[in-house]
Each structure stands twice: as structure tokens, then as C-alpha cells.
Length: 244
Image (cartoon, rainbow, N blue to C red; front, top):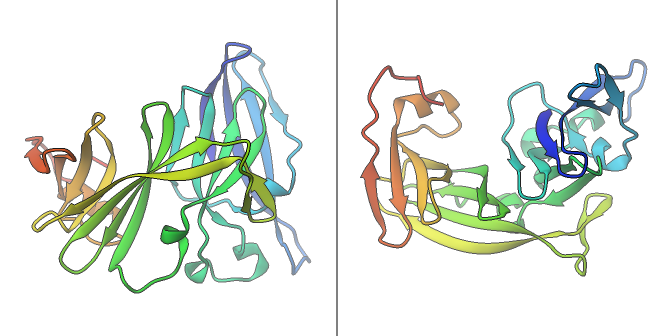
């Protein structure tokens, strides 16, 4: 996992990476996570002293959803719990979370996604989460798809030092607040939401196949106004599979 951000204190640009290593001859907790940070102009990477928070995250070698909040200088990754190294099949592990890294303090924090999304259920045909910015805050946009319609839920992460929420073996000072719920009628139900175009409009891809990221390029990008409940075509033309 890699993140890029601006240190609001030192006014410098930093790159952070989290990688994992497999420890031979170890059957329990075989994977160990390590983190390094590179400050532009320093000429070298610096190893971070990470605690158990980072060890609770599964570090994938595939691309993952992430978002940098330039308002507070915090980088966020949509992550899974690190149960694969414990011999647990992560396809059946729920309790997804957000790993956050403060570019200035160089500290990590875990926050569980809203319980409604992390619980196992057969109610939805498929579901997907994207991170975006809504105003000054990080937002999680959930596309919850059923057989004939899609429900879009927008949750905003808010700092609350008076409310410490259990997140794995640690505690988070963030909490989630549900801001919007949108029901998309046919023919928009085969879609996913990837972010905000502006305060009221969502950028969505229609005609996508569940769990097939490649189908996004073959879909149609639309803007859906949450106030007027109207969709408009962006009228983007070109080679298929070009947009991701």
C-alpha cells in the first residue's frame, strides 16, 4: 500500500508505503507488516516504528481503494483485517476497515466501516465501497445492489475525541455519520458509484458486472443528482476500456 501527501507542519511532501513479509517456519502470524516514509529531498527511506495497529491490516499486492484528505493531511486506505496470515480465508472474513495515516504525526489509526456494510448478508446481490471527499471530510460511498435496484449510501467519517470506538485490538477516535441514502431505479440498478462530481451529484458507472472491475470501462458514466433525482449522460466517447 502506498500513499502520497503533504505535511502541513513541515510543508514537505511525503510518500508512505506499507509492505508485508512472510516469516519462514512460522505457522501463526506468518506475515509481518512494515512501514517506511520518504520525505521529498531527503534522499532515503526512513523505517517507521509501527505498533499492532498496522499488523491488523492485510497488505494486498493488488490495487486498493484509497483517498488523501488534503484538509487535514491524512491518507486513508480501504482495507481488510489481516486474517490471511493466520490461516483464515479472507473471502469469508467481514469487518472491513479504513487504515489512516497522518502525514504530519506519522501515526496510523484503524476505523471499522459502518456495521451495516461489514456484516455478512445474502440480501444484496453485490456491494462495493469507494472512498471520496465530501467537503472537508472523508466519505465512504456504498453501492448495495439487489436484483432490480441499487441503494447508494453515503457515510462521512468525523473526528470525535469523546467517542473511542473499538477497531480490532485498538481504538479509533473517528466515527461514521450517515449523510445520504439514494434509491436508484431501473435502468440504473446495474451500477456502482465511484465518487462525487460536486456536492449534490454522484459519478456512477452503469451496466457494470458485479465484481468485474474491467467492466467499468465498458459501462456508461453518468451524473446522478441526489436532489432532483435525475441522471445525465456525460457523453464521453472514445475507446472502450479506456476509463477506469
